[in-house]
Image (cartoon, rainbow, N blue to C red; front, side, top):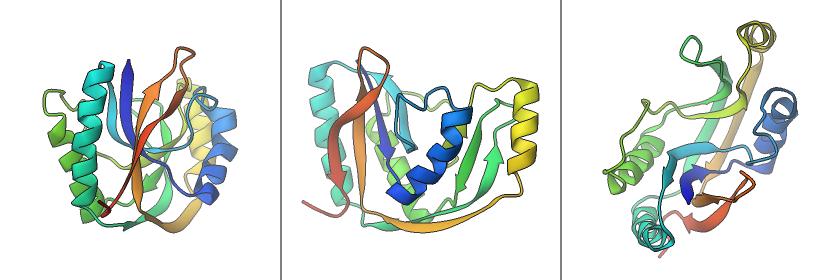
Length: 170
């Protein structure tokens, strides 16, 4: 089975992201808007239980922290992904790093760039048009993150929560 670790933002930020995703993201119906802490990986049910135990310990080591989105950006020319840029804070980086250390046998494909995807799998022309019209949009939302989630992928390709971990809580 495939698993991943994410932060789900507030409903307000999810609604804003979905207002773009329903037009520009073919994964719109498969997963709620999220910030990825650990990219998808294969694991058995038994391994997932072990990972969940590790993630519980990670959660206790971190307190709730602010999450701030500041603008719309893109990963182009690497790929045609458009996203809400999330400010990279010390707390967010520390959480990301500790989670990925627990999964050290799995390589990180990319440097950690905190973001919430709003468009992907766009052609070069589509990307240019959409990003051109959105790049000056100001996104200035701040909220508090107090939990993260271990997800698993269902047979139909959609993702659902396996377990939720509250920050700073035993």
